[in-house]
Length: 168
Image (cartoon, rainbow, N blue to C red; front, side):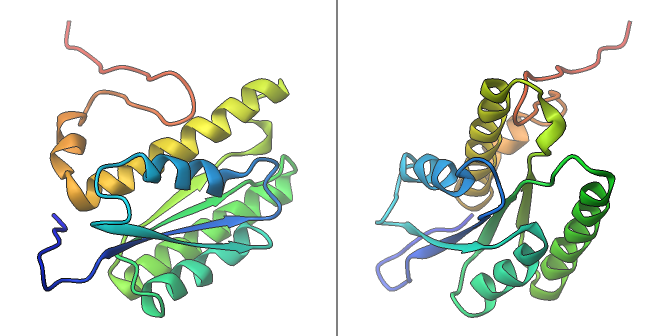
């Protein structure tokens, strides 16, 4: 659990988003983090924007290595074409590699353009998923018991929870 004492520095949470996404995922994540206890006292947000989701891995790695972030939320939107899905997979692999190279969590937050055909529903998915993962990043650093309490509950980000399975 990240804690700040009188001699320690303020913890940094990185948020990197893209210009390609059809929703401002970075603003949603930053807004959620600004509502968490300790914002600007115990932790602050370092935000960057890159062109597209294939640029997220390097930006997240730089937020960790150059800006000293303890965790990064990487937000992007793959399009609906088959090549976009392939590129999203490759981008996800890059994000995983950046995590391994830095030994630092990078939460990949992708909303695929074809997850909802209704624009209002898609916007809702963007907002919910961006905020939920930002809160997850906060909990990972400052209150991991929140995550532990939710283990096995089928909790989803973006749509309604799936719920836990039960033995009959």
